[in-house]
Length: 76
Image (tube, rainbow, N blue to C red; front, side, top):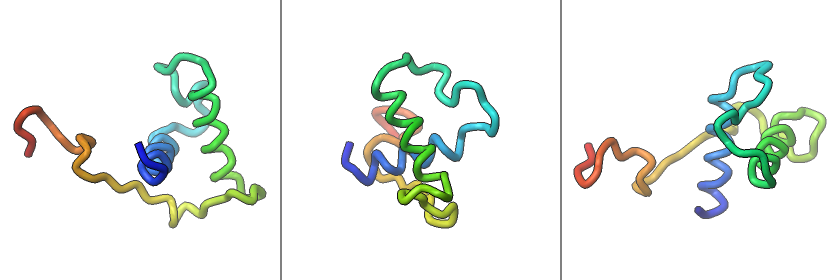
């Protein structure tokens, strides 16, 4: 996964998470990856952070890497 795809994945998680949720990634095992994702989302959504990304700039894009495939081997 390249850097842009990874950023898009994190933004998608941000959009899909609910406000006030105890654990935004409940099906993920605790560990460094989960922690890094949660910290990243916190940084880019905190208006006081130097890494803040305005909501209008939080755009997720997808390409033909399987993210939009409905079934394999034939996709829509």
